[in-house]
Length: 261
Image (cartoon, rainbow, N blue to C red; front, side, top):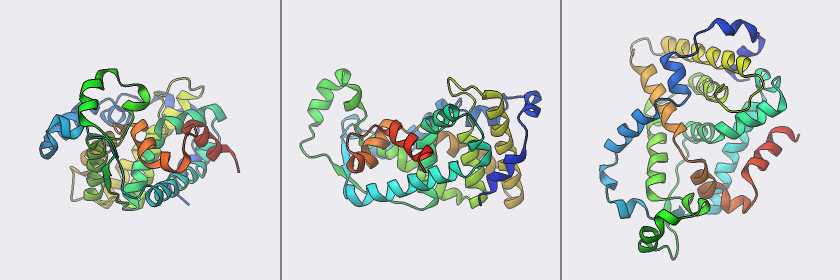
């Protein structure tokens, strides 16, 4: 039973009076990513060669690592499905929310389970070709994992590992990222906004009770939340899941995992 399920008995209408534009709301809604990117640039001095960072890479052990990542994704979807407050939303909203946030939730899952992975150069990858053809890359080619993209993902994981979040902190943070009223096309956006605000309050309270001696901890947790939202969906799909699912559409797969018993 996940702690976030405590939200389930809340009603949606009562949240309309809450002010949605708090600093916490803005960060968890992805509005402070520009600040995060500046922070990450300062941590990337060891990889500051532009050519080097654009090298395309792949997993050293794509089958084994892909299976591990698939297991984390399955647990993530089970977590989402286990929330009564989520399952009571319209099916279309459920699908939209999951498609929008599955990568941040997956990164939190990888961090929570302490998953590590190694990459290597893609066979026959030409740095010169990437430099010359870079501006004309197709969408598919642009999603190919690069050393820079992997570095960003690993930076997120290390941020989370350094925080050593408790299961409660992870659960409430996942809820705050999942219930995002800014996702386009939602029919129950006011209800979802209320659920996000409830998850945010629960996260603040958990951090305060678990770490009363560290007043800056919440800020560090929120910065980590912003960092996971900056990880590329396409890069994660190509790196971890392409070796397992091939050309299967990831959105269709997520929908099947969400609704097929």
